Length: 331
Image 1 (tube, rainbow, N blue to C red):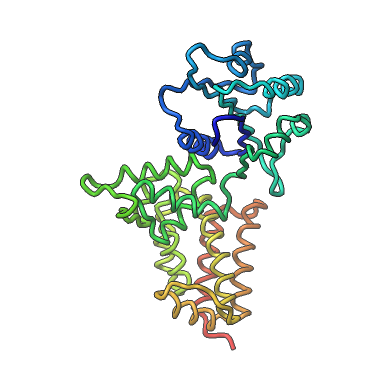
Image 2: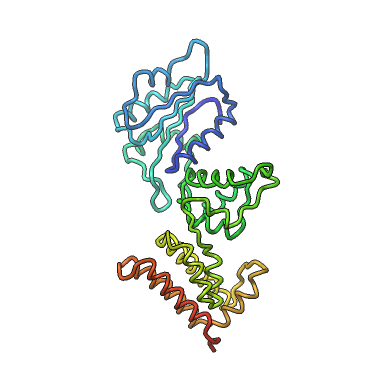
């Protein structure tokens, strides 16, 4: 970040946006002597804002102007701002936060803002940063990296359960990871280079995590062990909705993976799982795998259509999948 210019930060996730802004300020050498002023787009900027934007201070102290939700400003303010930014004080470092949702890979910016010269000029200078927030693909990477920074390493099962259960928002991720940090025994504080390992059992302290170990449940289902599956289900009864949809998501992924294995596609599997997955895929065959995925899709439809409760679907699905997986091999 150079000492001159203004920045547009386009991101629906306020924590990601603020983290990027702080990183830019750190690179620019900002410290506690720099003044900070925050304004919001749901109010018209006061006269003081325009003074801070363009006038030179008596003592030459750098100042940071942050406008949260700047996309809410009406077109009249943006027209005035576009002119004022042409005479920006070299002591001022403005950040305009456009916290808008994204659609089809693009931010939904107001048409009035898109027509302003200040935005097109910033684009040409490379002063516009865009990030669509956390999604299914980026959440896992973000959780892994942020956990590492906090001195944690989530085991594969724990990471999978964490990412399926936590909302895809940086602040929600932070809150839940901080809960895990608090569970680390005194004297075992981890570091980025030597993290504390987190298993699925540790996730039980988080309010969003069911007591049921959903990965153990899937192993019981695939083994055709109905009594063990029902014992595991009983531990998750208090959160029937959450458990059901977490289980359905994992089972859908599992059957797609088994289909790839059964069709001879190259799939990266953990060495400890490779043999069992190959054996199960061969035993079920294309017909059984199709039937399993159909059971998963039907369970979701039954709940969403109101024909069955989540608890009824869990019991029915467990019984059907155990029967399917325990059946003789299909030729």
